Image 1 (cartoon, one colour):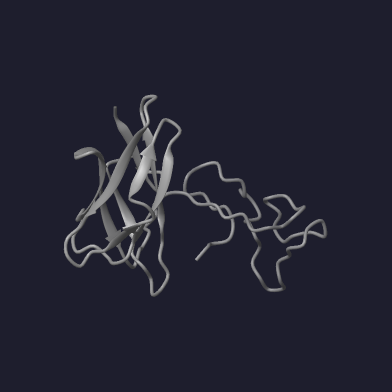
Image 2 (image 1 turned 120 degrees about the vertical axis):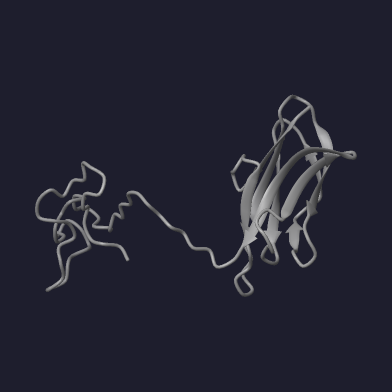
Length: 165
């Protein structure tokens, strides 16, 4: 019998947790499921170096074909990448595992396309200033919501309207 393990929806064998920001903690879902029709009782074990703390909402779980879920929460940041191991044990045997890193001060770098749709209610998506059909209008002296021409993106990098900062 094999066990499927997903941390925050990621089925890979490596992932990350977000360390607390002040008093705010960020629990993430751990989904467990047997890959056949059997149900077993398992134990979740976190192996981490001294000074790195991770909490689980439950360590004893019943794992079956319909799946079960618990929460994992980083209490402190990692010391090095991949220093947290989440293991699913049935008896003394490790049936599934995942390597985790608890990170703080998360920064996301994005390279690609992004489109933000500013609400204009009944107006079309490429309406320049807003009309009385909607509730959102451009203010006097404010730039148009979208360019006057070529305002339907058909290629990567093409302008789609206001710059989001």
